[in-house]
Length: 276
Length: 167
Image 1 (cartoon, rainbow over the protein chains, first blue to last red):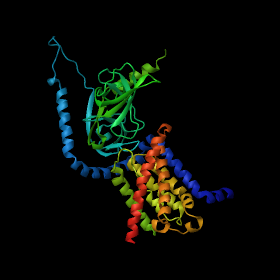
Image 2 (cartoon, each protein chain N blue to C red):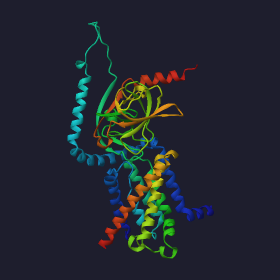
Image 3 (cartoon, each protein chain N blue to C red):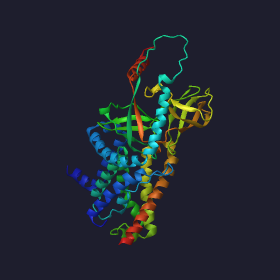
Image 4 (cartoon, helix red, strand yellow):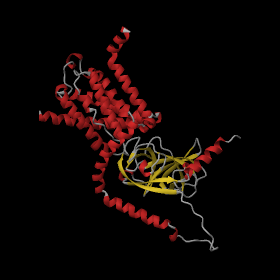
């Protein structure tokens, strides 16, 4: 027993250091469980309140630009409502059956980083407003990311600019799928991998979201093809994408609730489990 | 930083500056220098090391909360604090380091810059490595660490110059 105490007394500094290092590194790699804890919730509320006050001042300076983006989006939405569409069917009087699939919640960005390897966004809507982890986040110019953690009034979003983000995207013209990832550095540049060789890619083509992940409606802009090359090993294209969202000036976002997500995911899971 | 109270005060100032000023500075997509380790660099060697280690952990952890980085900063901060005596020993001969304050004035320009530069480089390397955690990004990590540590060293040096004048 005495030996143990002598050991602790002698190496107390190193032991303290070892404990701190293990705690810190475990927390770094198990972000999920710890963020969900009571501790995270209360501290997130605290830090978010401070950041909100800071952002309020910053936002005021950007009002002009934000307004413009809103106006542009409104214009585009008007183009989507049924009234402004030409109905090409010859047969008249047929009833149209529609079902609401996506609903949107507007939120302000109160904290954002985009110059690190792993970036995060905090928005001022939480589970009181119906936000849930795993929901998609977009802005007037395109796809932003995915909701990660949710507290009462705030949520944290993992944007595309994160080492663990893999968005499924497709080429708007040929509809070929690929995964969009970000490899750090320039916050306007991302890569799209695994695009099949058959896709006839052209510079300037739009890369858009698709419904494979059940988070986004299809056709939302991710970015434009800036360069592409054929990977000789996998015989698929590696595409450089110029992101349509400028994370450096992000102020307003919309969180998407896909009302049919559960149904899609459950169906896909059960058909994957089916014995052959 | 001659009195524990002033060290505490400067630690809080450094935290705020890191979160609200440097945290919002974006340069070329590569540079994100961390300046708050200046507190551990200037922390007198003669003070209790366990206390200093706890301060380093708490400061790193606070910044982790603002940056959603789990315990990344806490890890880098405690590492820097732990290995600091060895860096000092490598830079300055044994006999003088015992009671020497770790400032630009006391150490002289070459020694202080080597000590600060090495400390900040190790800090940023450790930080960016665990953040990316990918061997394929090794060169990018190295590149970003050298740039960010360089900028942080210049900042620390500038701050030291100003505090020299005011004394």
